[in-house]
Image 1 (cartoon, rainbow, N blue to C red):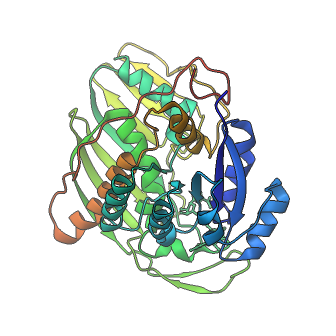
Image 2 (cartoon, rainbow, N blue to C red):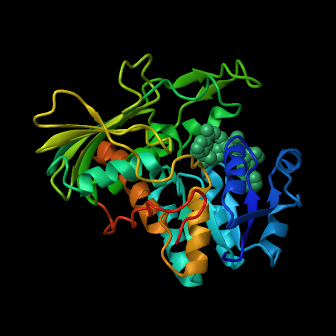
Length: 370
Ligand SMILES: NC(=O)c1ccc[n+]([C@@H]2O[C@H](COP(=O)([O-])OP(=O)(O)OC[C@H]3O[C@@H](n4cnc5c(N)ncnc54)[C@H](O)[C@@H]3O)[C@@H](O)[C@H]2O)c1
């Protein structure tokens, strides 16, 4: 087995628990130390998950045993910390979004090339059995040529449950930068490169009140669109709508299958791209009923599998799947939606996009390469 990759975690908030729960199932990973602006949060996560060292970010960056900085801070800090990590000679993997605008993504692309280090970015949910099986259905030709899709993520936002929801309403947040990464990454993996898009985006509910603890009653002024409708055309000819909103109450859509791809020979119901497993269903031209497609990839993965893929790729010298190029492509499309709306014109991707390799189907859980 390859030597473990030692990871230094920065940002010990809500999502860090999901990573720390999954990491012990992925033998390539060792979470060696953790840091947070709030040292009490870092200490609490270290105690809960047995992380041997709690320190400042600067100590993580200076620690020669740490190879990868795992950045689970808020969106505004993703690129500044990634640039610090690269300057310190570390690979880095961050939560989504890659950055809060395209210019940040461009700075990161340039720095990763200059330092010849790896940058990875969430989401990694497309590596799960649900999305991989859906991709295999399309690639196998079972629904014929994809011609159309719908993708919906419709809700009222995060102020009813998240302990610190303010960042979701600042630039780098909103439904597009928060949920768009799951949907656009899934669509890119299913359908390939985007040709062009147009969008409308607005701030529909500009003043919000936090109803979760501990900030119950505090007000949030919304500073980025909380409702985005995009029309997207893929290079393969498929055209459809991505609707993502924090302004829609009780939206009665099928949350089990928020993405549907329509082909010339059949229709594919794709599971929630914010999850790893989830059912996949197909109905062909002559089918009376929907058919469940059995998963042909390992189930049970969770957040941290993209980090483990990067660590495995590092040891094997192959490309990692949650690549900087893919995350930049997603960031460019998300920003493209806001730009298209503001300027009233279509957006075309800034860089060519290539899908990552599919996941291997026949390996035991936890092992990512044969
Ligand atoms: N909460 C979720 O369900 C969820 C799910 C998927 C992805 N994410 C993404 O994960 C990221 C973090 O979200 P969260 O919900 O865990 O947020 P959070 O506010 O709960 O945690 C963020 C943590 O980062 C720390 N931090 C912020 N800036 C820092 C800096 N400069 N240096 C060191 N520490 C810093 C904060 O003190 C906090 O502990 C976001 O990008 C979010 O989009 C969150």
